[in-house]
Length: 457
Image (tube, rainbow, N blue to C red):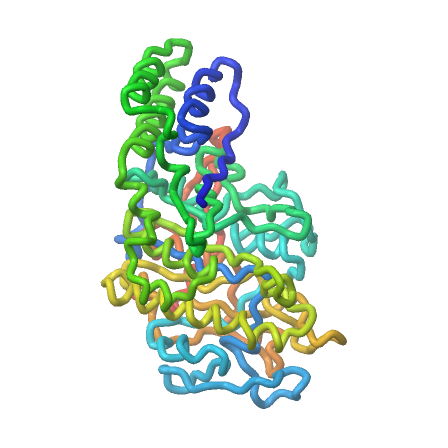
């Protein structure tokens, strides 16, 4: 099943008809979700990427077992796993990512990313927004001021209004949360206002019963009645002129979605051959990556795919490997990651989409250099690795280096604001593109610098 998680804010009394109209469409507040503004930002340069897919390994993927192995370090640092030679001369990666190793000629690796924050939610906030959380190291942080900067997805939605039936930024297959369902800050539009929230689509594309009922008109509403409701809504006259403009555009989009099959087709994974679905893997995360590819084909500018926990697995089936780290990464984490990531990059390339789609291998921090008493690695934001592919990125590049234990940066330090500046640059926007909050006050999208060593042109 698929459902859209609306983040629409409460509406003033004189907009109650708008709310009623949305409810009349089967429970989805689509007019609120689709209230995209009609202003766009001037591009800094021709875009190298049309779309971005955030391959989000939330929980803290280990640098030692992925992009920055330390084979000469003591056993309590390097761990039990070896390395494998990648497609790039001189670049060895962890032995548990053999398929990804074949693709490094298309990938740029960052080995000295730093947040200096060891809490999931506050370090994650910095990764998603480019702004350090105030204060650092706060677990289960709430999404509220002063930590209400917009996510990268919200920035993209603000800068690039949707051109088709789908919004310009989508998050799959669920929001990011700490134990107790505490959502991380930095996942929504924050200062930009709720109309710029990325669509949050709760779904499980791996489910045999996966449907897109949420985008279809309810069965009890025949086409004639749907058209009648549209006429009723068009006759509303209690809105101001400005509100009416937003309402008309949003309602039109809502009716287009529920009455047309074009948007629904983007979610129809049954159109994909079984062998390709098997190539990605049949997990919820992997099938969400395949769905992300379909969404960028349908015109979505940014899709963020969040890793989801797996029942009956160590460490709740996630990357937060405080115990039995080696068992977790070997038995399921790394194989699932390696399979899905390599499939996504290869699939995009085969379809001629990789050159215009930027893929970001992403986590909120890394793991500690040494194992703890439970055979796990704990949170570590002092240095970790990320990777990028496609969309104006130079392949076969390693930028930055960590020290001999992958504990601290030695060269080429990168902060989250630089990553966001680089993504915006690849999309054709100045990294410091002007955004305006709900009060009209300007602020820059990023205060970072483009990572020149990894970009083309």
